[in-house]
Amino acid sequence: MAIAVEPNPLRAGLRLARLPDPAAMVIFGGTGDLASRKLLPALYDLARQRLLPQAFCVVGVGRADMTDAGYRQHLHDAVAEHSRSRPIDEDVWSSFAERLFYVSVKEDQGYDDLKRRLADLDGELGTDGDRLFYLATPPAAYASIVRSLGRHELAHNGTSWSRIVVEKPFGRDLESARSLSQALHEVFAEDEIFRIDHYLGKETVQNILVLRYANSIFEPVWNRRYVDHVQITVAESLGVEERTEYYDRAGAMRDVVQNHLLQLFALVAMEPPAAFDANAVRDEKVKALRAIRKTTTADVGDRAVRGQYAAGFIEGEPVTGYHDLAEVPPESHTETFVALKLFVDNWRWEGTPFYLRHGKRLPKRSTEIAIRFRSVPHQLFSEEQREGLEPNTLVLRIQPEEGISLKFGAKVPVQGVRIRSVAMDFVYGASFLVDAPDAYETLLLDALRGDATLFTRQDEVEEQWRLVDPILEAWRAAPDAPPSYAAGSWGPTEADAFIERDGRRWRQP
Image (cartoon, rainbow, N blue to C red):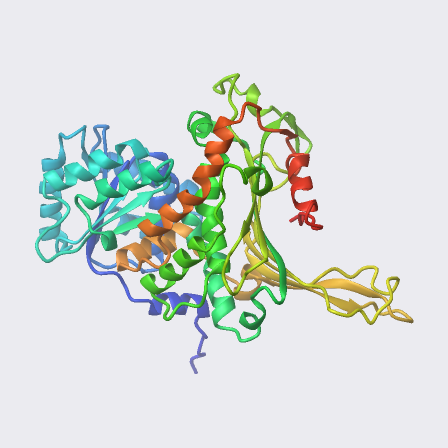
């Protein structure tokens, strides 16, 4: 008698997802770090789960001269090192690698070769002229690549669809963000542009919407009446590593706050969408961003703190300070730490502060959203009895261990009444017994399917820049260097004073 085996519920859910249409994915920067470490490993893992269409291929585009065979070998080594499913399954890889190709494109030269190669692959593989272009290149190359796609009639092919995925940063201020969008719109319509922020592909980030709108117990208390304040933390123990030249031009505000942190904020603060589709969800995110109380240069001292890490210790190991890095100019005032206080001027959140912080060389890598609820209106218990009691807190852990925790008060099992805060924990790995998909797996699959829910729209990007531009301008005009903080600490003392002025303290993840 055969034994019926229950399918893994998570994998069953993935298999039931609508498979993408046949398509060719063209990756500009196809031999670069992003393609090798993230994009191709994610595509391999999708192929391993049979979530890619049968008629599918990847065409890597780069300046180097390379054969298809050489490209496949280069990617085999990258996928073997960076795929989340190791060791690599050679049978799956062999089938996947048959759909990997390479075209050399230098400046405007080579686009006609790319066009011919794609046309040949349409005929051989049945990809029907559908195209997903991915810009995995430095941002300075975006506009010229897009214009070349238009000039060589690669972007649109009769009735077939074309989409383009653009990596952050989306400009370095509001003006440059608008210029980038204008260049993209010369060739692609807004609904064909997928601005990718990999944070939005993380399981716990997506679970914010599920937690709020699939459960009746949370949404009624998700407002100013019950929430004292919200803290959103993106902490990194690493320094700037090999990105020093880029980072010194960008800083923490442009690198993380303007995109990752404000996207997390929008998902927490937004109103319920009318439907779970791309436009409805993004409409509500834009409304939340627009409702943020505007910060002028005169307000910056009360609403924002910056810092720059000095030498210190991380996990007992000495690390050098930011200014000690050879590529950093002696006069650099680039911030490696940012803390913000935001107010949302709408019915739901009026008067409830949102505290956002991000920093390099903090004690640990951790991204979390902590919703701190108000204390009970009347205490029945004495101060001695409630000595170990903290306010109720709902914590959404995004990395490194994805999960959700709810802190509440419980009686200690001793004679008499003693109250201590305890936590109920949900951990993805322990609950579902499977690895969560990598963020790029989720986002690439959505881009191939044409689902833009987890991608940022032009008006979202512009609202984010409207918020941070005045702060950056005030810091640029300030003569003083950012306050320093020792590597391995939780930031400058000014950040502690910043929140303690309101009678609150930073939560330590």
